[in-house]
Amino acid sequence: MSAHEIKPKDFAEGSSTRSEHNQQLVPAPAPLSRYESQKRRDWNTFGQYLKNQRPPVSLSQCTCNHVLEFLRYLDQFGKTKVHLLGCIFYGQPDPPAPCTCPLRQAWGSLDALIGRLRAAYEENGGSQDKNPFGNGSIRVYLREVKDCQAKARGIPYKKKKKRKLPSKANEQEVKFSKQSA
Image (tube, rainbow, N blue to C red; front, side, top):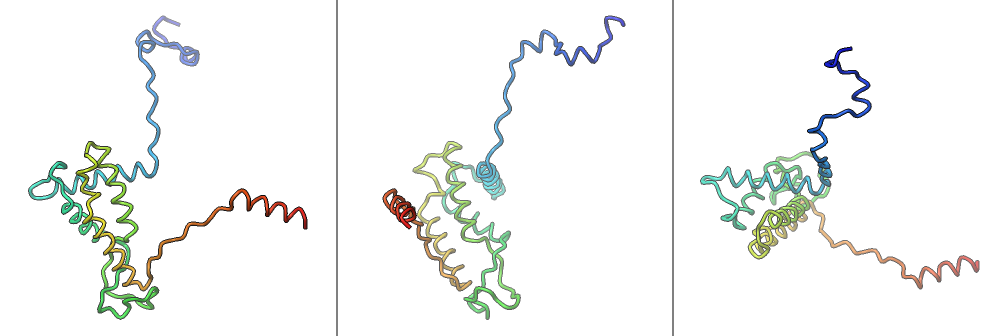
């Protein structure tokens, strides 16, 4: 075997060149959580929306009006049937037949989107006091969407009550009563 031939055994034993020893191993970044991935995707989508405006809007020029326009723009990609006031199925939770009412973004989806974009804005250098996603008009818009969708579907939104966890005293009483029986 000549000096230029490489034996497979050399690789298995970890032979390396001098330059490989000088390089530091950089750990791969941890994979993003589902929330972080969504937040990044939403942020990029909103950024692209601003760039596509005529004229393009920079992030520093972005106002709550741009955010509201973005939310209305997203409605065309929605999957939630929202019956119009004149529809015969208006107010019915489970309509018996299809209708021509539009599909919209669900209120819950929009609410979650705004939460992610609000966080992303601040993570990308925006100040909390100038965050267009935290503006009161956005909250009003979301409340109107929620109320409109609830009426159209005939399902009133009610705040879920938090389940009370048993206190330590109650747990001990339960254990004692089980042991006595």
